[in-house]
Amino acid sequence: MILPIVAYGDAVLKKKAKDITKDYPNLEGLLENMFETMYNAYGVGLAAPQIGLPIRMFLVDTTPFSEDEDLSEDEQKALNGFKRVFINAQITKEEGDEWAFNEGCLSIPDVREDVFRKPKITIEYLDENFKSHKESFDGLIARVIQHEYDHIEGVLFTDKLSSLKKRLIKGRLTNISKGKINVDYRMRFPDQKKKR
Ligand SMILES: [Zn+2]
Image (cartoon, protein in one colour):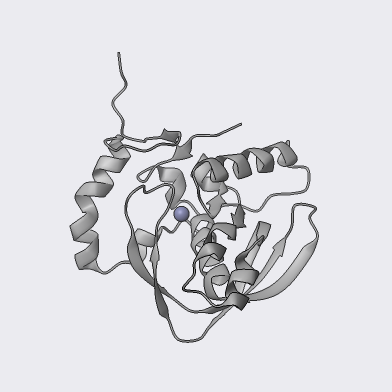
């Protein structure tokens, strides 16, 4: 089932999300719906707050990035089929010199900006079977994880922009929260006027 994606301006996107336990109701069905929702919107990641749930869970599938011909063959291979579920994740280390990448977000359609982040991360998390992992990632995989991880911390990529950039996009963000935007996937807008 495709779930509506929560748009910029909704309070759930600003909340620090909470850990879940193995007996979370219908976890398997929820993950299935989240993957379907992400693929339907051509996303490479989706966090639970983006479907209105303030829980520490997100998923990624970087396969679409593997078709980028500017990347090395090794990078393309790493990105192809990298599909994971991250539950109760904690990034324990971020290393290296910050690099810029043009990020977008399914909750903020049509806004893309360069965001600076460190290139290498170490993350501890549980997978969909509640098996624990500690892994390091770099490059675009790390980038996608960092973006989704920010969602469970209540942070959006637009929060990381310079104050000038924030001023420049303010009107567009207001329009998104009001639903004044064309988007080809299901969304829920916090400030949309109810139709009578
Ligand atoms: Zn996002």
